[in-house]
Length: 365
Image 1 (cartoon, helix red, strand yellow):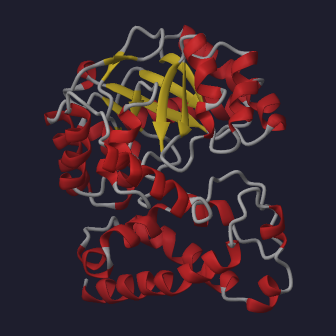
Image 2 (cartoon, one colour; image 1 turned 90 degrees about the horizontal axis):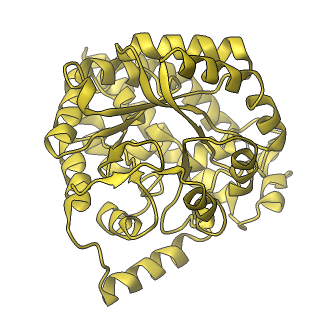
């Protein structure tokens, strides 16, 4: 793959990396093969986080012997200096490394959160950089790009990670131009809108945007190979037919894709709406694989056990028609006009099927 500069960091990255969140769902041998395929295909940027279950541990094991040839990114959601410092130490241990190339203040939610995270937590990252434990400081956000714009104007970060895809183009208006002006490394998450977009088209579209690297996840070796193959193409120019397809996908998903802006919250029924609609990794597995392959997948048992109770609780809350039907506050707040209640209800039968599949598979063990 033709390398791109990661802002002013001095690092060069292949334009397609690997987002490691999905590695937390499968057994190590399965996730290891995905990482090995990425390396074979020329991928050199791996993005993980403490919050991605045990993905740091799996990534650290799989990258053993390749550390100097790859760029590793991780993150902290810590709200205090002590918490962020502890997270850095834990990430170093889990990744089996002496340093992390890019370490991010993760998921800044609003301007109040900017004030908090650019206080003690940022101090912890600065001290870690001084000590050589991390090399570059970044920031990530899922909400309105204006939150990250505010953060970038207050501190000279080295990189940032933000959702960008055919549907979610808001960062192109102000955030990414600001990054280019100040020579920040632009890294992209949710490039295929958590599986709603066809990956070949979505990634080809993204390769034409002013970014350094996109980090789609992969649940199989075949998916990893497909993604990296797009990055390796010499020409990403879209044909007239592909441009028309991009336009149609943007229209079709305009009112069917949660942007994780958090405006729908708080929910009186305590449904974590953005996480359910916008970034539900396990549900995305089911939707992408289909029931049969979902049943055959080599699940990490601890991940399923952690998920089970939370999923049952989410289903119960969604199915409480009396609460949702008498409320509808989320839909009145949504700036994108999403039919949130019906979207959640449409997920409930599939969530129940997920639990039924896991129950049948666990009974075979």
